[in-house]
Length: 446
Image 1 (cartoon, rainbow, N blue to C red):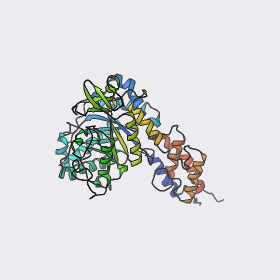
Image 2 (spheres, one colour):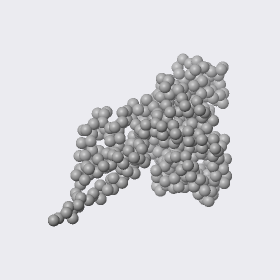
Image 3 (cartoon, helix red, strand yellow):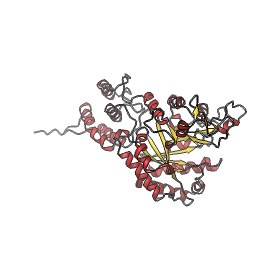
Image 4 (spheres, one colour):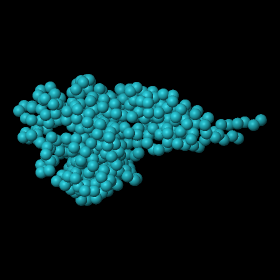
């Protein structure tokens, strides 16, 4: 008697491994991540109980702000920081799997970046910093880190030391965790930091607090600190080819880094600053402006005798729309506690989220009809068998098991989400994929 034992083909095994791997980090092609900062000084029991969960469900990542690096490579983590991070992580875990954002940790920030220069200058200290940071992520369950050095000096710090610190951090944290640099748009690090071995995942451009740009004799604005034209110029300064003409020489010392827009993020402030004769040092939260200020257009406010400018809700929509059109990776929001409650129709976060959802293509909608169905699965099957890219859901120009997982994840969720599913959910999906692969691919017999 001849016994026939079915063996899973090598190709199917490889695809299964890829499917399982991608359940730990899947980012759909064309997605725009909304990333919100939450400073440690904003966190209290009332905020956690009544506001945080609603905001988390609208985000792709929340960045905890309040930790920095010491000159010896250690971190300034306190018991309060660990408690705050645990509260955020618990709130994330309490959400349905499809609504859970990443937990990120920001290191540094304005006025808290003194330790960066010493650490970045030493390979030994860079190693120690990366090891300590990895330990903190392991301890807290965070999966992303944001290095916010304000600001590395032009020259060796900006061109060599900070990039070395970033790539060493990425090397330590590994492929399944995110590493970002957050910089003033004029602080340009080398494009090589975003390519090759240990490339970081993205650069967040702080396109707010730019009132000083109005000092340019060629600028006709009134000190509005985060105009869309400033965002557009910042992105172009990074994405234009090296050597391109400097379109804002009063602002930028150099222009053109050749960085892909898909590696960049822009800023969206949830606060206003004084303008048009009022001091730019005046800063007012959107919540206070909306409840106690007066406005006729949603952006120009009078507040306690000062003229204050903030992006209107229409401008929030414009920023999200422009980010999609430009192909940006993400928008960073400073900061979440400055907003109205997420249930409020005039919440800035809600407006950004709803606009993002409206514009987001549905990964796995292979027939482009705006919905997920059996026809999309048939297109994937045909493309997989034929080796074409018609069933490509993640932008890698091929059709494989990862695309199947993306299709099935979005087919099962309504509305479609951009969040990462639980690892176990991908494992539960894998058998159905294997059945199809086993039927379609040649099998070995003995």
